[in-house]
Length: 389
Image (tube, rainbow, N blue to C red; front, top):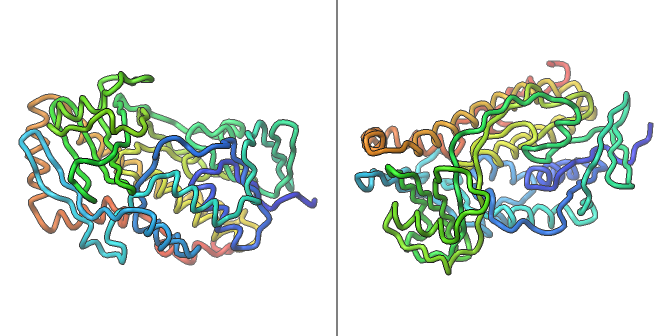
């Protein structure tokens, strides 16, 4: 049957918008349905890794992203016994030898501008998705659209994933964090700093426009943290004064992980956080979603994507599994409590950061250069041919 669109993308976050831009370039008829009408109030995901910058080249957006962000080349690690060393991205084997710090709201704005407002329906909360033999029906309020395929980019809660009954075995970690962006008076410049102490961790990342993110570990989940908590815990654990008056925003999170049993069901496809979830510590979630989007755009370029959906599922699930493990490992090591565990962690990190060969590998590790299938260039080309699946 004739449909309104080739593809409807549910969710207009960074991953959904990147996918829409890539599919638009292919000439597909599409629409992005986004329930928000206003930009998000906090910086959210801020780290864009070198593989993602390579993906953005396909849209000619890499330089615009770099010009809008801040290049983080060095990450200094502090422990209970003082400074332990530095992990640098300066020598990683990529033309982009840095992590780009860019607030998610800016990432969204750049992608929205590139896509064009006429391709996005805002204030549009999808209430139902049904699939039939040759098409899908999407309903939002009194409105209804048909499409050959629906791609869910609607976040870790993903109503679309729930409607199709896709299993996503999940684990919520007993670890809790509060983060806030502040006017930066630290003197750290474009350096990232991690502080691992006996009473909890503090992480600090630079942002454009003279701001800096501070993340503090808390003992329990706090829906409404006491005023000034980030400032107070930062001062207690690091000795650094981060004035409450300089705070711009605040948010809380308790990390969780999941990886869906399958990334598609018939004509409905899961992408980004709808397909997999991981700790935001380490900044791997959005970048994993960008690689999902690149893979999906490739298989849609062959016409009917159905023959290649098993390949999408196989390769992207493996990539997500690796990213989930890495995010979990880094968060686990950095959140040990107590004096003795902290001293042991200091010994481990001082050993690792004191060896140049290990530090070089760590840079590539955290820049996501060693994630399997992190871009299409790392995927066996024979697997991208419909006859090979």
